[in-house]
Image (cartoon, rainbow, N blue to C red):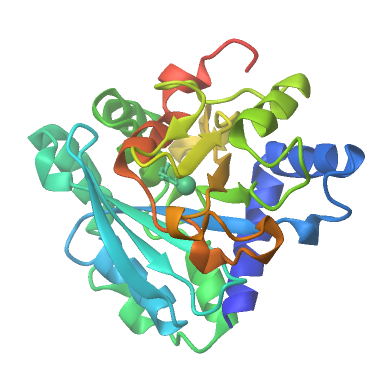
Length: 297
Ligand code: OOG
Ligand code: NI
């Protein structure tokens, strides 16, 4: 079930985000990997809207059912977001990062726009799913929960919260997957080196707070591409180019107590776990216009 759901998410994501296939191909051409399956997926991420019948409490039930464990919370006051990460049932599965818009913290006007859509969902939709059916869950994650937004509503939300605008249009589409760097060959196994490779190949990186986001302990380093603009069809068949999804890169360093062990014997448990609010805060901006309007896009 979990494999089916993850494969379905990755397939749609690859179709929608041209950078995914382009980065994988560039890695193969450079002999960094032999095939796409060689990539270790550090984590995937979803965005949700915090209203009672939706949000994290609803969404998480899917992955808790598949054996994921809820871990630390994160808060983003400025961006009006909360998040949790979830540890996978087995180490070859990606971690999951799920965030939620704090709808109550937005203006009355923005709240009214959001709830005009979300109130079409009367009860928690996940409670109605047979979570043992991969096909049903896969369909749910790619189905419209509410009517297609109007461009006017999308733009009004974007003026106040670019996250809100993104999720009202994109719903549960995969926001990003994350290429693990630490086990790649020398020359590509740090964020600094991998960023240099990506930029040489013409990919545009999120530079909010600097291109390398580093946790205060120095052990979790992350970077991401800037989401490309993709044509989107809104209500009344109007079209607008909006930010799609992006790709992230993560380097998890060895914890100090294991630093003396030979590099080849290091396991996932001996590296930095979890996420970092300061890093995440800037990574969110990969779909914000401050980043998507960067030169080169
Ligand atoms: C998630 C941003 C945070 C991380 O790894 O810290 C994140 C998002 O853009 O929805 O991915
Ligand atoms: Ni991430």
